[in-house]
Length: 230
Ligand SMILES: Nc1ncnc2c1ncn2[C@@H]1O[C@H](COP(=O)(O)OP(=O)(O)OP(=O)(O)O)[C@@H](O)[C@H]1O
Ligand SMILES: [Mg+2]
Image (tube, rainbow, N blue to C red):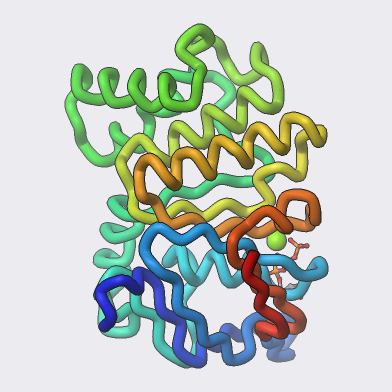
């Protein structure tokens, strides 16, 4: 594979069965994403954006077609191998932040490292560094309820980057934020993508945000119907 391609979809289909009826959430998606690229994904509600991210994030398997991530041919791997690749290579950011309410910012960022079995001192050091990168050192001991929406999403971004993933998948990361905070969160993602050479896939309904991404694909009915580059 061309060394520069980090994610390759080849005629990927994803069908869901609901009440006995097949529904094509992805309908023949072919797409190459290069290392360090920032890809925007737009499309109406129900068009297949989250499904595309879930397939790229190894949460869902394609029902047909092939997906290659960092030279791993997904169809030939078992679920444990997929979990391992996901844990090491992929960070997720969600619309609703998905932080654990009982844990401080620092503990939330440490959490994935704990699951990876890193020791406490190493974990703390890495989490503090990630929180510094997103500009939150001063509120690292706050719980999510003691932070603004923008700060919460920054914690989620720190949690996504703390394990040095090569790919970040962001599903409507600004949908719960006002426009000024949305722009700040987007700028932070662009900055981290550049500094850390991360590949970012971001889906959004927000035209102001999506129009700033270097490359945008538009999805309708599980198909890529348009591609634009800035
Ligand atoms: N687990 C599932 N079981 C059955 N159908 C599903 C499942 N997940 C998604 N779908 C269907 O697949 C289609 C695509 O859903 P998806 O969540 O990818 O859309 P989306 O573009 O992310 O929408 P939104 O902008 O509202 O988040 C929808 O019609 C949805 O109902
Ligand atoms: Mg969605």
